[in-house]
Image 1 (cartoon, one colour):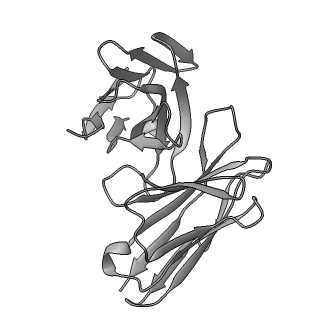
Image 2 (cartoon, rainbow over the protein chains, first blue to last red):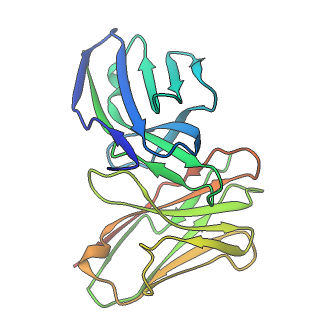
Length: 112
Length: 113
Protein backbone atom coordinates (compact mmCIF):
# COMPACT_ATOMS: atom_id res chain seq x y z
CA UNK A 1 0.00 0.00 0.00
CA UNK A 2 1.36 3.37 -0.99
CA UNK A 3 1.67 5.92 1.78
CA UNK A 4 -0.32 8.55 -0.11
CA UNK A 5 -2.83 7.51 -2.74
CA UNK A 6 -4.62 9.57 -5.33
CA UNK A 7 -6.74 8.66 -8.32
CA UNK A 8 -4.48 9.33 -11.29
CA UNK A 9 -7.38 10.49 -13.45
CA UNK A 10 -7.64 12.04 -15.82
CA UNK A 11 -10.52 13.96 -14.32
CA UNK A 12 -12.44 16.16 -16.71
CA UNK A 13 -14.93 18.82 -15.65
CA UNK A 14 -16.67 21.55 -17.64
CA UNK A 15 -15.73 25.16 -17.09
CA UNK A 16 -17.60 26.63 -14.12
CA UNK A 17 -18.15 23.27 -12.42
CA UNK A 18 -16.75 22.06 -9.10
CA UNK A 19 -13.72 19.79 -9.36
CA UNK A 20 -13.24 17.34 -6.49
CA UNK A 21 -9.84 15.79 -5.90
CA UNK A 22 -9.30 13.08 -3.31
CA UNK A 23 -6.37 11.69 -1.38
CA UNK A 24 -5.93 9.02 1.29
CA UNK A 25 -2.90 8.42 3.47
CA UNK A 26 -1.77 5.44 5.49
CA UNK A 27 0.34 6.88 8.34
CA UNK A 28 -1.78 7.99 11.28
CA UNK A 29 1.21 10.03 12.43
CA UNK A 30 0.67 12.40 9.51
CA UNK A 31 -0.01 15.86 10.84
CA UNK A 32 0.28 18.35 7.99
CA UNK A 33 -1.41 18.10 4.62
CA UNK A 34 -0.69 19.99 1.44
CA UNK A 35 -2.01 20.40 -2.06
CA UNK A 36 0.36 21.39 -4.84
CA UNK A 37 -0.51 22.22 -8.43
CA UNK A 38 1.91 21.20 -11.16
CA UNK A 39 1.64 22.34 -14.74
CA UNK A 40 3.23 20.15 -17.37
CA UNK A 41 6.99 20.57 -17.37
CA UNK A 42 6.95 22.88 -14.34
CA UNK A 43 7.65 22.41 -10.65
CA UNK A 44 5.01 21.99 -7.93
CA UNK A 45 3.33 25.15 -6.67
CA UNK A 46 1.79 25.22 -3.19
CA UNK A 47 -1.90 26.12 -3.24
CA UNK A 48 -3.31 24.95 0.11
CA UNK A 49 -2.32 23.43 3.42
CA UNK A 50 -4.46 22.15 6.27
CA UNK A 51 -3.65 20.82 9.73
CA UNK A 52 -6.98 20.38 11.52
CA UNK A 53 -10.08 18.35 10.80
CA UNK A 54 -12.71 20.23 8.83
CA UNK A 55 -12.68 22.65 5.95
CA UNK A 56 -10.29 25.43 5.02
CA UNK A 57 -11.23 27.85 2.29
CA UNK A 58 -8.98 30.11 0.20
CA UNK A 59 -10.68 31.81 -2.71
CA UNK A 60 -12.01 29.17 -5.09
CA UNK A 61 -10.17 26.40 -3.26
CA UNK A 62 -11.41 24.42 -0.25
CA UNK A 63 -9.33 21.77 1.48
CA UNK A 64 -11.10 19.18 3.62
CA UNK A 65 -9.44 16.94 6.18
CA UNK A 66 -10.84 13.92 8.01
CA UNK A 67 -8.12 12.35 10.15
CA UNK A 68 -10.36 9.54 11.39
CA UNK A 69 -10.87 8.39 7.80
CA UNK A 70 -7.32 9.40 6.77
CA UNK A 71 -8.76 11.39 3.93
CA UNK A 72 -7.93 14.77 2.41
CA UNK A 73 -9.73 16.43 -0.45
CA UNK A 74 -9.49 19.58 -2.54
CA UNK A 75 -12.50 21.27 -4.08
CA UNK A 76 -12.07 23.80 -6.84
CA UNK A 77 -15.15 25.92 -7.40
CA UNK A 78 -15.92 27.71 -10.67
CA UNK A 79 -13.22 25.68 -12.43
CA UNK A 80 -11.34 27.50 -15.19
CA UNK A 81 -9.33 26.09 -18.09
CA UNK A 82 -6.24 27.57 -16.38
CA UNK A 83 -6.85 25.12 -13.52
CA UNK A 84 -5.96 22.25 -15.87
CA UNK A 85 -2.91 20.69 -14.25
CA UNK A 86 -1.80 17.79 -12.10
CA UNK A 87 -2.73 18.17 -8.44
CA UNK A 88 -0.38 16.58 -5.94
CA UNK A 89 -1.40 15.66 -2.41
CA UNK A 90 1.44 15.62 0.13
CA UNK A 91 1.72 14.85 3.83
CA UNK A 92 4.26 15.42 6.56
CA UNK A 93 4.72 12.84 9.26
CA UNK A 94 5.35 13.83 12.86
CA UNK A 95 8.86 13.11 14.06
CA UNK A 96 10.43 12.77 10.64
CA UNK A 97 12.82 15.12 8.94
CA UNK A 98 9.66 16.89 7.92
CA UNK A 99 9.99 15.91 4.31
CA UNK A 100 6.89 15.71 2.17
CA UNK A 101 5.52 12.37 1.04
CA UNK A 102 3.61 12.82 -2.21
CA UNK A 103 0.91 10.93 -4.02
CA UNK A 104 1.27 10.34 -7.74
CA UNK A 105 -1.08 13.19 -8.56
CA UNK A 106 -4.46 13.59 -10.24
CA UNK A 107 -4.54 15.10 -13.72
CA UNK A 108 -7.38 17.60 -14.04
CA UNK A 109 -8.68 18.95 -17.32
CA UNK A 110 -11.22 21.78 -17.33
CA UNK A 111 -13.08 21.84 -20.62
CA UNK A 112 -14.07 25.26 -22.03
CA UNK B 1 10.63 38.53 -4.65
CA UNK B 2 13.37 35.94 -5.03
CA UNK B 3 12.08 32.41 -4.91
CA UNK B 4 14.08 29.21 -4.97
CA UNK B 5 16.42 29.08 -7.95
CA UNK B 6 18.12 26.08 -9.51
CA UNK B 7 20.85 25.74 -12.08
CA UNK B 8 21.16 24.44 -14.66
CA UNK B 9 17.56 24.07 -15.76
CA UNK B 10 18.44 21.27 -18.16
CA UNK B 11 21.38 18.91 -18.30
CA UNK B 12 22.09 16.26 -20.90
CA UNK B 13 24.96 13.95 -20.16
CA UNK B 14 26.36 10.63 -21.22
CA UNK B 15 26.21 7.59 -19.02
CA UNK B 16 29.17 7.43 -16.67
CA UNK B 17 29.73 11.19 -16.46
CA UNK B 18 29.44 13.21 -13.25
CA UNK B 19 26.95 16.04 -12.94
CA UNK B 20 26.40 18.73 -10.30
CA UNK B 21 23.29 20.79 -9.68
CA UNK B 22 22.94 23.92 -7.60
CA UNK B 23 20.04 25.19 -5.52
CA UNK B 24 19.72 28.67 -4.01
CA UNK B 25 16.92 28.70 -1.43
CA UNK B 26 14.71 31.59 -0.44
CA UNK B 27 16.71 33.96 1.71
CA UNK B 28 16.53 33.11 5.43
CA UNK B 29 15.02 29.68 4.79
CA UNK B 30 17.14 27.45 6.97
CA UNK B 31 15.70 24.14 5.75
CA UNK B 32 16.51 22.79 2.32
CA UNK B 33 15.23 19.61 0.67
CA UNK B 34 16.12 17.73 -2.50
CA UNK B 35 13.53 15.61 -4.29
CA UNK B 36 13.51 13.61 -7.49
CA UNK B 37 10.51 13.30 -9.78
CA UNK B 38 10.02 10.90 -12.67
CA UNK B 39 7.24 11.06 -15.23
CA UNK B 40 3.82 10.28 -13.83
CA UNK B 41 5.01 10.18 -10.23
CA UNK B 42 5.06 12.61 -7.36
CA UNK B 43 8.37 13.95 -6.09
CA UNK B 44 10.37 11.56 -3.90
CA UNK B 45 12.48 12.78 -1.00
CA UNK B 46 16.24 12.48 -1.35
CA UNK B 47 17.85 14.49 1.44
CA UNK B 48 17.34 17.31 3.94
CA UNK B 49 19.54 20.05 5.37
CA UNK B 50 18.94 22.23 8.36
CA UNK B 51 21.41 25.08 7.96
CA UNK B 52 24.63 23.38 6.90
CA UNK B 53 23.89 20.03 8.54
CA UNK B 54 22.62 17.15 6.41
CA UNK B 55 20.17 15.58 8.83
CA UNK B 56 18.48 12.90 6.76
CA UNK B 57 19.06 10.91 3.61
CA UNK B 58 16.61 8.64 1.82
CA UNK B 59 17.59 5.11 0.92
CA UNK B 60 17.05 6.35 -2.66
CA UNK B 61 20.25 8.32 -2.25
CA UNK B 62 22.83 5.77 -3.34
CA UNK B 63 26.52 6.26 -2.70
CA UNK B 64 26.82 7.80 -6.17
CA UNK B 65 24.85 10.78 -4.88
CA UNK B 66 26.28 13.41 -2.58
CA UNK B 67 24.85 16.68 -1.39
CA UNK B 68 26.36 19.61 0.44
CA UNK B 69 25.27 22.90 1.90
CA UNK B 70 28.62 24.29 3.03
CA UNK B 71 27.60 27.63 4.51
CA UNK B 72 23.97 26.99 5.16
CA UNK B 73 22.94 28.93 2.08
CA UNK B 74 23.09 27.32 -1.38
CA UNK B 75 23.29 23.57 -1.84
CA UNK B 76 24.78 21.29 -4.45
CA UNK B 77 23.74 17.79 -5.47
CA UNK B 78 26.33 15.72 -7.31
CA UNK B 79 25.69 12.47 -9.11
CA UNK B 80 28.76 10.43 -9.98
CA UNK B 81 28.91 7.83 -12.75
CA UNK B 82 25.44 8.67 -14.00
CA UNK B 83 23.12 5.90 -15.15
CA UNK B 84 20.12 6.08 -17.45
CA UNK B 85 17.89 5.46 -14.45
CA UNK B 86 19.05 8.77 -13.00
CA UNK B 87 17.12 10.62 -15.70
CA UNK B 88 14.53 12.67 -13.83
CA UNK B 89 13.61 16.14 -12.65
CA UNK B 90 15.63 17.11 -9.58
CA UNK B 91 13.74 19.52 -7.39
CA UNK B 92 14.95 21.66 -4.55
CA UNK B 93 12.61 23.08 -1.92
CA UNK B 94 13.18 25.41 0.98
CA UNK B 95 11.31 26.10 4.18
CA UNK B 96 11.72 28.45 7.09
CA UNK B 97 11.78 26.73 10.44
CA UNK B 98 8.39 26.74 12.15
CA UNK B 99 6.41 27.63 9.04
CA UNK B 100 5.93 24.09 7.76
CA UNK B 101 5.48 25.02 4.09
CA UNK B 102 7.95 24.11 1.38
CA UNK B 103 8.45 26.13 -1.77
CA UNK B 104 9.94 24.48 -4.81
CA UNK B 105 12.43 25.75 -7.31
CA UNK B 106 11.95 25.28 -11.06
CA UNK B 107 13.92 22.04 -11.05
CA UNK B 108 16.80 20.65 -13.08
CA UNK B 109 15.82 18.16 -15.74
CA UNK B 110 18.54 15.55 -16.18
CA UNK B 111 18.72 13.34 -19.25
CA UNK B 112 21.31 10.57 -19.24
CA UNK B 113 22.01 9.15 -22.70
